[in-house]
Image (tube, rainbow, N blue to C red; front, side, top):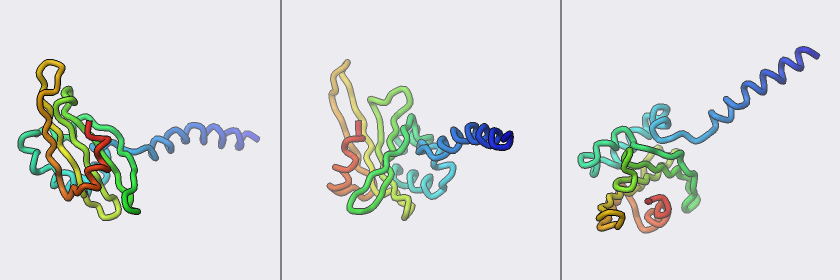
Length: 140
């Protein structure tokens, strides 16, 4: 009976760690475990990285969202400029099967007080109309 109690107690201690390991990882965590993801991100954001050096550290991020488009599963990652999310942000689409960043967008906003004065979206990678609609809800 004591061994059963020990087993039950051990399972209770381990189960939070197991579920935490299954949780989606923020982009900066995922790139530590997946060099292909790190390389793919750097290549995708290269056109805007010079003007947004914070991208090299991924910024403030959220866990990925798993979505499917045309029977292909993707991970959508989102991030923004630390302490200035409303001014600069990005959304990228990663295909974990092919280890490619296939699409993305970088958004830069200008404000006049609380009013949005100008917004510029730079489309990244192979972002066609379907991918633009696919990531649209994650741009702001």
